[in-house]
Length: 489
Image (cartoon, rainbow, N blue to C red; front, side):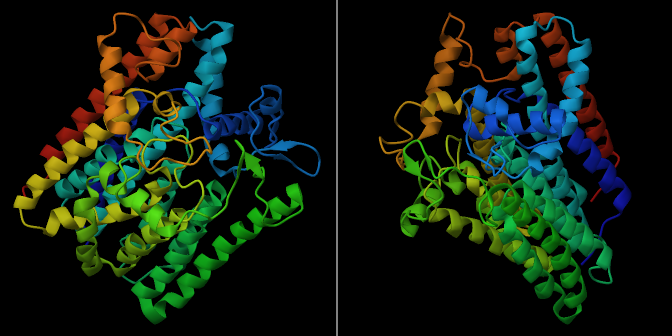
């Protein structure tokens, strides 16, 4: 395996991250609408203010989803990993609210939520920058690596999920960071114990974001042996030990709160439906995730048509990365294809398959580097198609489109015929043409539009938009300049 020089790659990765970060800040929705997002919002507040994961404010507000712990405190069913990661944004929001003019008292909570959602803009941008670094350390030319990472960032669900308050962007960044330390560290002597420990720390944190990522822990361990063979025993032991400590702590927390190691705090029933069952016929689930108009991975992430064959090229560069790029998406696919709530609640596209899509995109770099030049024209077509699909998703509220009876049937079962792309396109055209401003929570789904409707001064919002837009232009200009100074291929 060849490695490019690290200095230009690191500099370009930083500029790429900042450019995407400012873009994703501009396109953030700035608000929560689903129970998953609301619950996370409450959990961040409780951690930041009281150092507790209990959410009594959810009960008083009539928005509680979870169960009471053994002390009678209301707990959400979500592990606190993401909430802990977002606490710094809460501190930032508090600082901004202390100095921002034009924010009425009743709007402060909305402004704070918008700041918290900015965390996912950072996590999505970080995931793209990490993927770029992985490609560079595989020996892929910097320009090609950047093109592949841009395909990933703007033409897959990583883009729209940067605008909402779900865990997928953080999980994407963590999984790619673990892959970078284990398989693309630049070390020629195999995987060091230090890098194995760092990857174990990252994967352990991922378990605390969503426990289902235990699949990632197992498959990363297998990938170490596939890549290193007998030499993989020591790094695999270190990796397993560190991950195991986090896993045991997660189970111990369950027992402490609910008296059962495997009780994560989900209520037994929600919306009249038993939760966390595995009763979807596997073939139906596979059809939904592969071919349905509302959840197809191939439809909502067109670059996969290049990435999947690119995995064969990836295997020639690094068998460890090829292993996780193959097995981890399959694990997520078959696990959720049998899951009762495989749609991921109210959400746009295949929410639960986003981590799998991220891993599949490890094949994008080798595909662009090794395939015939004429296929690069296909990459442009796939980019445009994917970008359009993501823009449709973030332009109006997916909840507004789905809370119509077309998404769930009367038994709260997902309708595989639901097709959001045409319906949300029509909704966007309606709001563009309508002479009347859309009511609060409807219309163009951007943070500055929403906050204006809550009463925040337009001058304050204009200053925020100007800052983000200027940052985008500034970082994009420096990124372009850095690329122009690279030696000719």
